[in-house]
Image 1 (cartoon, rainbow, N blue to C red):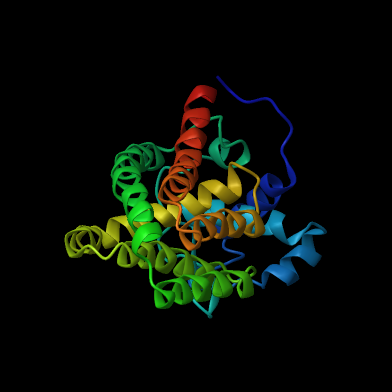
Image 2: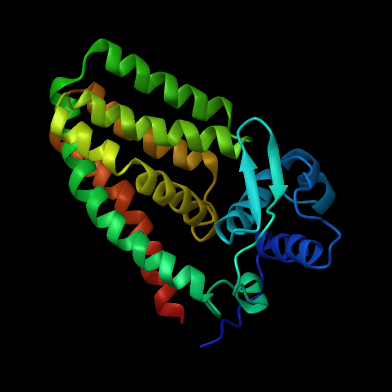
Length: 244
């Protein structure tokens, strides 16, 4: 069923940027203006611009390079319809449907592995582990307007929790899944920013709450907060399905 609700600000920013890409106004490989500049250009907040950029990134239309800015992708994903970008619940591109199903499967694995890692980390973490986790949080805080750097710190934070669990078998499992985990976290961030209308500050707060449970040495709380963090993404996927 089509979604007849009015477009929110991030959707019309997304629609405008998408049209510029399709019309060739923004060429493949071209660097976009900064979040600050786009915010001024469109007359909206920075979080609104980040939502639009995250959605376009999830569609494969933009590439964000760490410390280098945001660029038009050389080959945007096929099958992204105008309806799906104007109203994301209206029509799902086939490429996203397949990716969403894969993401659900990876979320199942992450829920099992990462909640256990968080619980063990709360029991076994060292001062050095806590320092590394705190540094990743600091990077995320310093890079709220740099999606690529923030994303890298996000992935590193989850990997550091696994390391703090001090179990080489768990570490090996996480390493073997590193590429898939990285890709799932990238899609997770896009869903978080776009579908949830959330911003980088809220995502940082979620990570900080997990860190605080680990630092407090509370295995159950650390596991619960990690589970809640992962479950939110699955809830977003379910709501998208319900709108179809």
